[in-house]
Image (tube, rainbow, N blue to C red):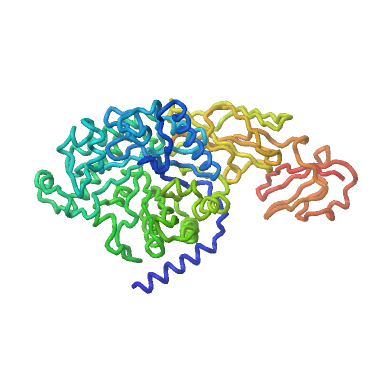
Length: 558
């Protein structure tokens, strides 16, 4: 069996390496975990004064600018750490990461700030919530009388010098629900992302025998534990969707769900070891996405990536890559290992990729960020639509207005679209290309993925990036996208000047008409040879498709 498995994975690797990295999907989830625990990713500056607060905020803006430039579209932002949080809360105190002192307000709301800055850059922010762990003794003491162990001792268990919420106690779901509902109600998050929603390692020794005696009702204790976690997941999913059904719910399970027919999990998996039945969550429709922590190499990666995808049940599975192993102090990975994994995920048409964690991207460890930006993410991408919640697209925008200004700026205006989920507003995507009509299925034509108004000013960084034709679409909160509205159409003045015929294209015919509109030539040939019968003057050139549609492409000068 193992020889077959290894051969299978080897062939898969060769297969995926044959695919070009520059094949750019329009729909692809590109996420990064941004850790606030101890300021590992952000912040490094403590907000101890107004000036340092501004520096702290600038640090985040610089990170987001870099991610946008590399065409990332999702930040998994650590909002709840371990019994403390990174926003003003009625449930838990401020984490020490922002000021250096537990419980101290940094003078602004970091979560609200991060959401606003992500949305400015067309990126989604998913609030990353660490669920079951609540900290070690030092962390608990730093929170004084407000720590969860002091306030709710019945739902807490100490195990290996770390405190945890007890998944088997009904009060745990209630407590976590309060935290999650506060975030969803108060903040415009795009998603809630659960971490460590499981039992701890070496979990058979977790001290919950008393809870099992009270609530187990004679059930097999292993299945009872799996059901405990699933009940918490279902409760949180239901509460979130009742408030804002468009908010995406996800988690990061252990990277190996269980043994597969292709390869064994070698004793470390989600289902048996930490009682995390994550694939069941997808089947039951109580999760929108999974970001499995696939921090493995070789045969410990490829068959399990396939397993997650094959059991997605129409939802999204986004493998998390352990890029921290590229650092010499963390592991002995080479860049080629991550590159092979990226090729493989593209080859099997995975829903996307996530990276743990942000600092290793920012530090461009072993040139990883350069590789991603130059080879894999050469164009923007957006999330697919959450059609199981809503599949009705907004109406298309109307009344296009476009002005090319002498200073190189393009002014774009349109009238608002409407959506069935009113009164919630839609956002807009802008596309541009040098051909008409603009193909909005092409990722390379995406200019802006999130515009919140019906007016936009485009200033290319260099003049030759200016595009000739523009289109806009409306997008609802679920990701459904309307038909495009062309913001400008070809005119004699805007068409390129031709001195020979271009390629007709497969199944198309080039049609030449004179100034009266009379057809004088129809040909499949390019170049100057077909033009010999024509006299001097100006002609219009159109490309006629197989269905008889003519598309004006240029003005021919003879």
